[in-house]
Image (tube, rainbow, N blue to C red):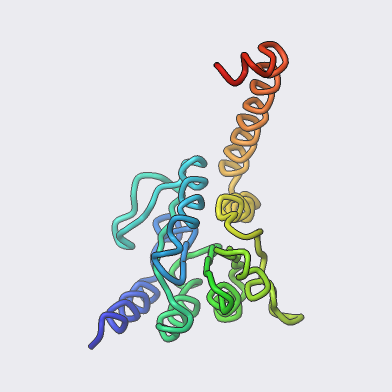
Length: 202
């Protein structure tokens, strides 16, 4: 049995446990290669900013109510793992998936969207040249996608999906947005009050 087979068995075993959704990851983050992690790391940051915790053990959830998990899943090198991830998403309790991939054949997000349907998938083109591949879905096979490299926005969109059911996440989104607005206001006031030279020297 290969390491890929072990991962597939793990996913299928987790899907068969009928776990309490409150204890399973709410968001799945997948990427085609660990070389995509520098871009995808912003999705982790956004979820952390919203109070999510990373869940590394399906059977031992962290104390946080809302969690996320992550895997490397290659559409081209490990298609069977991609199928297993998508096919078990609902049974494993995932409510939304963030999928990032790079290159001209960035097929992981759109293929996962087809396999995991109706679980929503938010695609992240890791590179500018990946955009057309990620968004190129036919009618009836939906995917939501962000601009190249914008995995932070993908995570915010994932949280927005969850906020339709969870008031707590909606409140966190509003608070984060207010903090960002306040930050812009602070910068604006500093630029005006200090002048450009003082602002650069602050």
